Image (cartoon, rainbow, N blue to C red; front, top):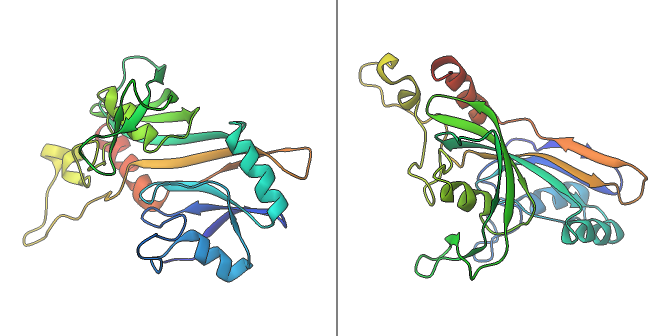
Length: 241
């Protein structure tokens, strides 16, 4: 794995840009899998987990560097005083420029690891707005008011707009340039097409917290990774409205 991109650091906390397909914390069953917590502890010593991102989601994530900071930040997350914005590339495009999804989420009764909207589930709310409309898809900003498992993925799928790349709630494991360029696509002879994006089309774009030891609001943004940028560049070129 390449060196981590540190977005903010002081003696109390560290904020990094998590690559996709890297765990936030050690795996319960295979603890030797690469994960942010182990990587950071090797470099900074003791590090405390404040919140997590799904393995397949990239973007901004925060860790504490002492117990007091961990307690203060954890309280902010628990009391929902933190603002987290995600950018999601989804199938199709919502009719409204912005909206609110207020649907409880529960575990799927027969598919392990999958969630679903359910009146018997835990309350969940996602506010969203359209950032860019394309012919076949859209880039949305999601402001999650609760932190349920797979919340954004479940909520957007329930609208009929699942993530462009999401094998569990959508229809793709990967996105190829041929799907964007269509009739304009040409593949060289004896060449196998490689995917533009082979992980969730979801990025934790920004995090806003109250600094636990200073009277200031800390706002950190995480740049897109190369694969996400490549998809947006191709969409702007071949799929723009």
